[in-house]
Image 1: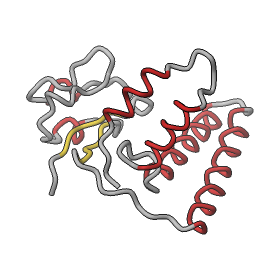
Image 2: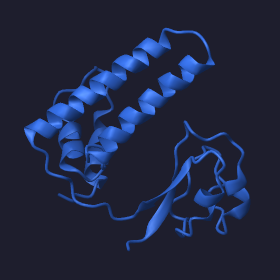
Image 3: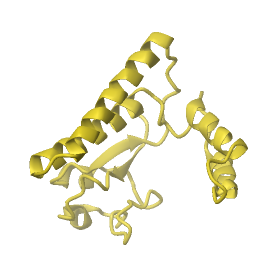
Length: 158
């Protein structure tokens, strides 16, 4: 088993902050709510104590990117479009339930993409996306230098 570190999903965090009291290194005690990976020892105490399930343990070395057939990619894209449509419909409705459905659809879509291997930071897809943005910036104020720096820092794992 590879080494792990904790990550917090800000959208799920209810700020109950039990993680602050159980973390032996203080990695969870940050002003921006992002766990300090350099302090995290991967014990998982914060994740098991988080009442909102906002903290997950992630391997330090992620697996190689999955290979996808056109059929799998088409199915994933159809599912993502469906989730996006459901999120848009829920956004137009009033009430707490509609807001919960909207958030749930967004989280499901993000999970689908992540599980499919398209959001792994070291994946070829992420690298190709950054290269495309650098070559063809979407706006005049696009931070090209920051994207180039990020690209140089991302480890390849194809």
